[in-house]
Length: 267
Image 1 (cartoon, one colour):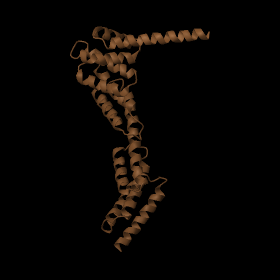
Image 2 (image 1 turned 90 degrees about the vertical axis):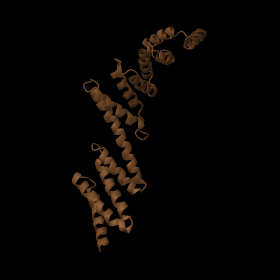
Image 3 (image 1 turned 120 degrees about the vertical axis):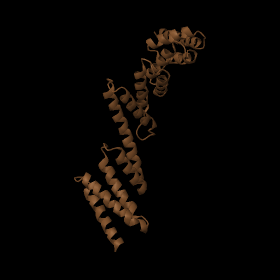
């Protein structure tokens, strides 16, 4: 039994090696019609890695020829099905530019955005890809507002925006944590302007208030009164927006200390 299993394993390895040699021979040949035929066969048989290699190989030869659009499309689809989202996204975007009147145009624009969505990293990493995905989804929704994909696209946009919200909040809080209060204040202010829908607006506004106070109280004499006045303004915004906040007592304490500091400056 063991000997039979070994024999079968050797046979399978030989078949795999022969298959690889045959594929490599085809890939390096000049028989482009055969390559195209086999690329489509591999694609239809769900062997997307080999299909992608052949379609990529065919791209330059068929540029400007009859099958160029078909090759470009299936190359992108092969990459997508292989979950090579970075390369697939680039290919779909390129396809949309090269074949603006293609029947696949809408799909290409959608998949270009979708690949960037799939390639978007965790919120604590660089979010360039996330921003590009949002821009492309928004452009898609504007161009094809009646598409059946619109609910899905809107969900993707919300998910991606939540990453940006978390990222920008973390940056602002990071400044607060290391006691860079002016940078924290400006970052929280920008955060509140950019994300009116953010669930952590209350926290952001409180930390902005506290950063405002700490920045003001440590300012130069000639700037302190003006900056303390800004703390009062920030407190008014917080208390009117979140009158039932659990942090209201802390905010009122900041307000009291600010008024006392202003009185001393006047006195």
